[in-house]
Amino acid sequence: MSTYVYGITAVTHPALPEGMGGVGDPPRPVRILREGELAAVVSDAPEGLRPKRRELLAHQNVLSEAGAAGCVLPMRFGSVAPDDDAVTGVLAERAEHYRERLRALDGRVEYNVKANHVEEAVLHHVMAGNPEIRALAEANRQAGGGSYEDKIRLGEMVASAVKAKETEDAAALEHALEPAADSVSVGPESTGWLANVSYLVKREAAEDFLAAVEQARKDMPHLEVRLNGPLPPYSFVEPGPAEPAGTAAGGADAGAG
Image 1 (cartoon, rainbow, N blue to C red):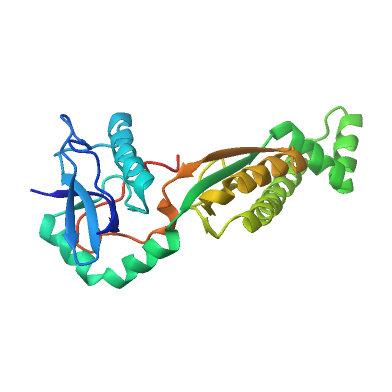
Image 2 (cartoon, one colour):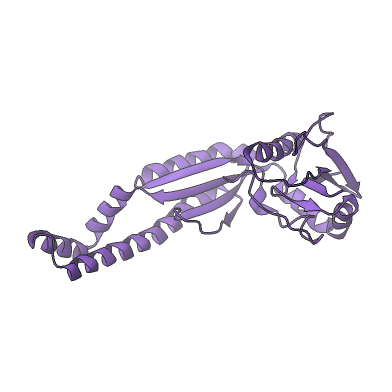
């Protein structure tokens, strides 16, 4: 039977609560596979697993329980290996890497920050900062709206200026938050967000990071800033047992929403 992998810990990690259930309906019992100095938190993999809310929460709950007791390298939702031997084989093969990651991520959590423009506010910024756009807009207004060509030209100028402002603000936001974090991972570009960045933060420094986020919101009120965390450090762990074992894994991110 295939093996579902939640995360990787040190073999000295405290035991998980007895009878803990993971993904699946009914929930599959969570168990530990040990290999040398490492251990994997796993369960049997249910057939036809889909990233539904209940399953995502089950995955997250196992990681939260494990993470509360010590450092765990979280796997993405849907990480499945062919069997237990495939998991322990990768633990042995990549032991040095996983030990280094456990040391690097010990006592740290991830915060994901996404940002977008508040439309009216950014248009005000663009108009205020670009005399050429202001002049054309005023000329069009006085001409009763302007010609079709002038309207198109104005729209293109505004769109270009907004795009440049997105790039500028994404860099400014990252620059403002980076000093409060140990490491930064820029996420894939996604529709509707001008910034999608994850920050690795020491647990004891979390208040400083949250204060930096609030200060950025005050300094850039034309941005809508969405904060998600604390999370297991998904963005700072390389692919785990599922990928080297040659199976399809990945799927939805159970935490970075």
